[in-house]
Amino acid sequence: MDSPDSKSAPKYLLRAQKIANMTDTAVKIPFTSVRLGLDSIIGLIPGIGDGLMLGASSYIIVLATRLGVPKSLRAAMLRNCLIDFALGLIPFVGDIVDVFFQANKKNVRIIEKWWVSTNQGAIKNRTAEKLALWQAQQD
Image 1 (cartoon, one colour):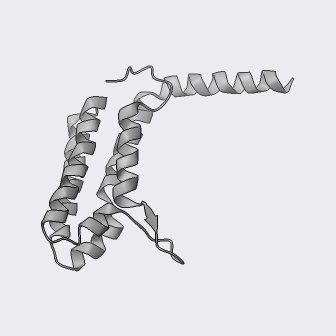
Image 2 (cartoon, rainbow, N blue to C red):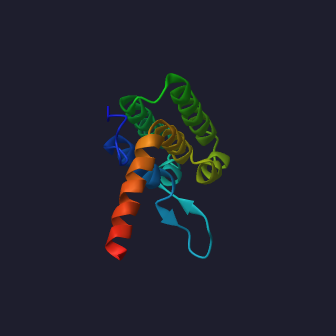
């Protein structure tokens, strides 16, 4: 687990962000604002695709555990994963829902909000240090 005095995002959070981007929003559909990822594409394979993506979603929860995210937040993350999995099992409708529900992005936002609130003091100190350095360079 990264120390609570961390001044930058820990490696587990960065890894979770990469996974969420890859599974939920890797590709933008041209001429729209809609983004989709591997979850939407692999989810087209009935049952197997949704199971594989549940594995990727579960790994984000494992990373949250390693970061020290509280059990109550991890339970909310698990709920998002199970909703996404269950909806994905519905032929055609589930594939469309996958594009818009984006459980992994929701779960990463939960981790990010928790991490920022937990490390708020260190983040403010780091920001003040950077600002002071920048101001000194301007003089």
